[in-house]
Image 1 (cartoon, one colour):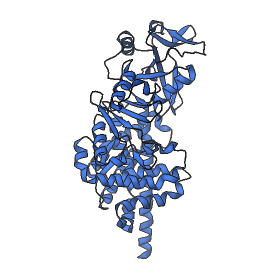
Image 2: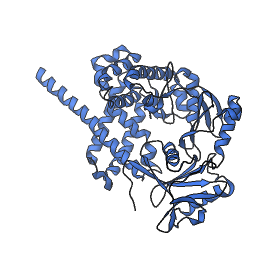
Image 3: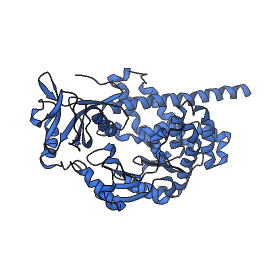
Image 4: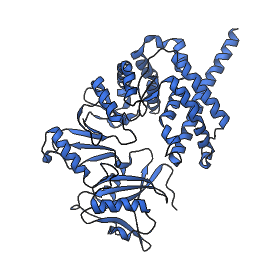
Length: 464
């Protein structure tokens, strides 16, 4: 069995031609099998899959469903050919064939059942987007919401996320502005309500919502700019302004913490975080016992328990800052910060939580520090963010408490991925790998606290 590069995920592609009821298959050694695609890990699979389909076979396709891990290896992704008039296969090994031509064992019975349903009736019943014509229904609904004729919308759409019950799609007018449609699936059922609430409470910090679709649990947003990472200008140009905006947004939510919790935001306030750290530490120990753990530093169970104790102590010190609980963005990143003509806004609240605001800032600041052009600005960035809260936080006692933030931030990321470590995804290699990476980062952050304590201890002895 071929093993993909560890930095890539392998996908078995089921590309359907709906009108002819055929499947794109690859001929090799007198058998027909599914084409396979390698997608960089931790990137948007839907966008990469549709891009690779177009680059390899000049086929414009729409993702219909992801079926998850296949027992023989790789994920199964189903796509539909949406423009059969523009068809070209330069590779003679690739061609359209009936489903029964597929080699036995390439798909299991459950996967074959889903694909037959799509070919026979055009839908699987697994979710509103697991059907052949869902993209046209979306464009029709968007036209009504925008009061446009269908001809005014472009046929070209860009899928960033896709699943049977979830979607993230960019659509645009042929000669006008663009829009985003997002539908939150079963994994994040409260995201729409959280986004609507934040848009109502803090409209200047989120894209404008134009319409909502109750049946799909989705909403249509006005395009508010381009991601910070792809802005074309140096990130350093915007870094200070971005963190100030982040702090202002968080400060504006301090008065609605209970409302955010009521509508489904996760509770990562420091007392709750302490309990979760203890609960999830055995998951890190288990991940470190996996055979793959030899790649990188192995952290023993006793050390992991010591790190957990340090993290708990760090939350207690952080409480002394007196900063109120606010909104947290537990998936903050340059892709979720959009730069418009006169402001930046924040998107993707699937992991919205409530807790100490510095946790989100520290997560973002660590990403700024990885950019060599921004690294020397980090002290200025920190100062700009702290000024949003209170000048008193620049005092020595608070500086010592804030030194604990990196470890608390990593502990929060651990709790934000609770489902990866305890639920149905627990045994996936990517989940276990993520747990080990996080454990090693927590170890480094804990050593930073320990080193600071050691230096302080030496100073006290010298003074005495």
